[in-house]
Image 1 (tube, rainbow, N blue to C red):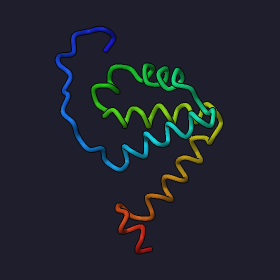
Image 2 (cartoon, one colour):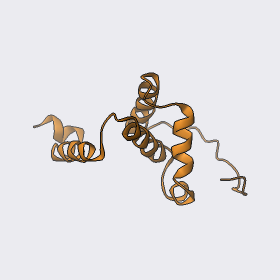
Image 3 (tube, one colour):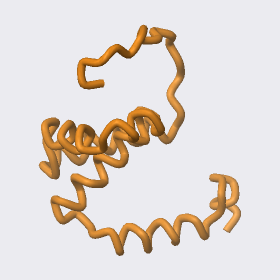
Image 4 (tube, rainbow, N blue to C red):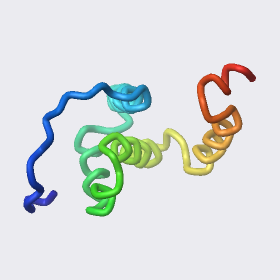
Length: 101
């Protein structure tokens, strides 16, 4: 990060979790709709600081940056996001829980 020594980059192939694929799809859809640009996404990622890069996974950082850009674009506000997240949490911890309701 920032040109500092970081060691080797692991090149192991891995399958992506469903939520990671959805984050990627959300980024493509929202940028195609004009809510933000690649530059806007990069800016939000860089503004997170070093701690985010040390504690969050790649897609956790992406979803945080996407969220920041969507709030800035007026797609929703943080109160609406919190309400929706509470609604989703009430559905259950798994897809199976949500389907059984």
